[in-house]
Length: 414
Image 1 (cartoon, rainbow, N blue to C red):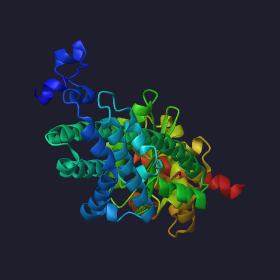
Image 2: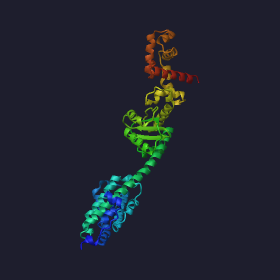
Image 3: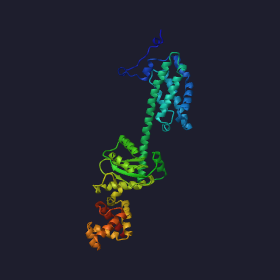
């Protein structure tokens, strides 16, 4: 009588699985149940397989040799646990492989940071290859094929289990990183940049090369976890460094790096909802980013006062509107960049711009009030533009200058 007739296959395939032509690992191996002799020889060969697997890891995997000693020991325990779990399941392969998830239980969760999922699959392949190499030595005569099929089917379950472990670790790490990122963004906005914040920023992957700026805006709808993850991927693609703060319906994004940060902002515009998007001034590094964040947030509050503002708009282009909402930084900036230079200049520049703005922006009326030729007024206004950076002949920029003169005079009399 043939061996197959002595050991009839036991099938536990459900009608649905049979209709789909799919077999679970237990159902597939159950079609070729190994003899007790093969099970005994595999069980007794556990030490041989473990030693061979460890040798192959050291010989074939460069990343394994580069690991610290402690991590190498954990990887070795995982490999040995995998072999032990397979042997236990092989003793009764008609049962589902419940012990698969236990393979990774012996290792600390931090191991997922030291080795990637791809490395773990390399580990699975090495163990499979080791068992296949020793199949003729371990299996009873004529059962080498059953042993190879069993280890291949079990390794598939191990691979799925590894993917689940890494997915859970990524989910936990993602939730922790999101909370940590929210704390860091809040501290940076407040300007509380101490050593702990620096270490947390480094833990979030901020490289710190190149300048930094902050861009703020609103969202069209609440951002759930999926949209938040998509937003973080988009910011990571846009700039070398990125931090995302989701504060209700408001987005606060820190961008840094050696690339074109203004272009990065433009690429992120579709991620914001309708309404203004304000870009803070570029600063040297993350430690100075509070200034950029405060300017951007004040600009977002004041942007409604300038309906014609571009999108995105620089916070420094909203200085008059920011003064109206009580932003002291905008007030100081206007005085420092316009009023003080004009007061200190020669050639009656402050007197000329005051006359020009006070007469309804008329060159002729300003010339009459100053008893000079209109060309003299035109020349002096050009000098005003050179000194301050704002052109009095431009309607918007003349409004900026008019606001600067007003707050400068108020400060001078206080």
